[in-house]
Length: 233
Image 1 (cartoon, rainbow, N blue to C red):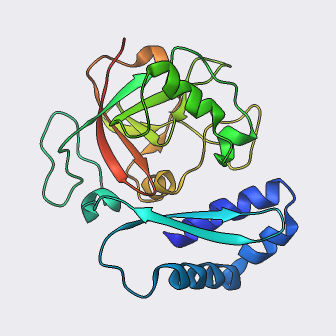
Image 2: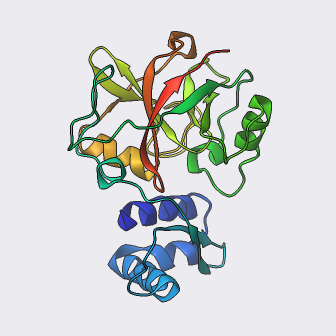
């Protein structure tokens, strides 16, 4: 998955014209350099799971931050498929276990470069969680709503997946930042994993189509794929 994370950082650096940063991340050399930085930070072997945060500056400086994170079953971290709703997971599928609660933000959000690339500037996501009265420590996610059309953009720290017409779907994202194409969210690494492996496809999700109590999934690069349930207030 490191190549997915590198690609995401490279696209952002290229978009903003951070040439020194883009040069550091480009090609096989850039990927090898990033892998070496991580190895230098955490060592060849670590006894417990770590959350890594790669921070890239305009000047091309790259730093690695790390912190402890709970262990995630491999089926949830890198799944081959997502189980249908309303049935238990098979042994080879992501385990449902303790589900997150997913809320719908009551205030819509304007798409921007910052919602597309999800940088360190995350005031819009923090505001959505504050409106819901929750912290990032709570097992609760908030869906951000696109101001343009009322569709679901994404979660504050995850990509959402909804069961529609017999398969899982996730809001569409433009290949490059666009004011018109896609729903304005981020092309995250776990989302890319799901789309490239056929776990889900893209579809616009009207926020009004959500049903209280419906099963869904959310994902990100740290926690993998997390079972969740919609709760409408």
